[in-house]
Image (cartoon, rainbow, N blue to C red; front, side):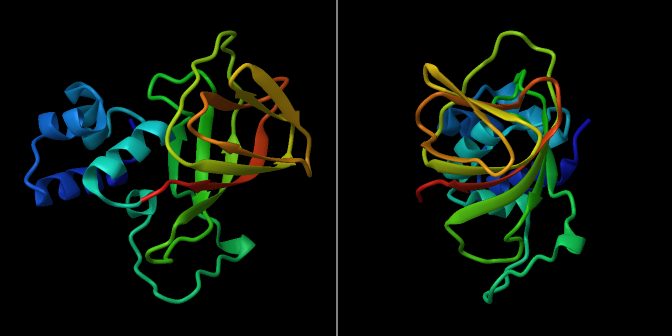
Amino acid sequence: MSDTGIGRKITELREALLLSPEELAERCGADVETIEGIEAGDIVPSLAPLIRITRALGVRLGTLLDDDENLGPALVRSTDYTQTTRLKALETHSDAGGLVFNALAEGKAARHMEPFYITLEPSEATEHQLSAHEGEEWLFALEGPLEIEYGKDTFVLQPGDSIYYDSIVPHQVRSHGGEPARFVACVYTPA
């Protein structure tokens, strides 16, 4: 069972737009069971479906991950990290391991980038489901090796390495070698 905060926000936004779960599912290319499962907190959502849902609802990704509307700068001290949400990596049925997102711009209204501090637990899967969505991503490895499958290529980042890529190319981010990984990510999705 996931945190129902995201599901509750999706439900509130959907209802404010007078959309049924079926209409939202159609708008974002998902099945209605997925929408209802996320709204109920029965499905742990992942980044790609959340981006499609926010686009269908006409809001930014941060609207689901935080709800403060500070117009000034967003200062987050390292001692103030709080888990924003736990997502499965990439798709709802992902095999990449669990991601714990800590928002680094929580409270900054009308932002165009979504910066996160992320902990990625290893997965035992041997085959991987890639995902694609609009936008760009920048990752900076902090701890543990981080593996990025991008199209037909695979990159392994060590602490201090970074990668910047177009998210429209099928990709997956996962820990490498069975070790947890920690990294900073900045996700941009066009309006």
